[in-house]
Image 1 (cartoon, rainbow, N blue to C red):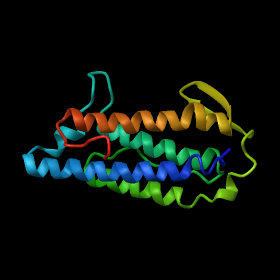
Image 2: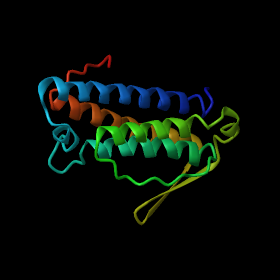
Image 3: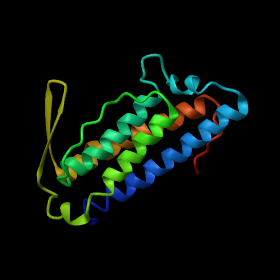
Image 4: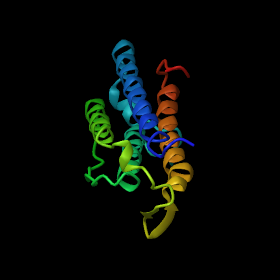
Length: 162
């Protein structure tokens, strides 16, 4: 079985780098088609769904909290206040730098360690392994895919190999 580090950090780093590439395609699309970047940044897939920046902030937070909750890195609180592509790129760069501080040995022997997560007034308890399998990785990819789908829905020429 792969280590907790191997099943999380390298995959998250790769997906965050892919998200940066998707945003560059979106920015070029805005330039080429004379579309206001704000149009893409305010877009969502449904009326009651959060817009594009929220999706990026959520993948950033989810990835960061893997390193914090499982790897034991000290949390760095970040505001979720990005409103431009430049700010979102900066956020992803900051997330990548944070994840690259995580070392495989920080994750060793922690498969059964307890992870506590609070959401609103609810508290959830996991093992590190179940936290990755049941919450963190699915949540990360849900929001990563939502960001991709928003761009597709807005006419940005991205495909599954992007």
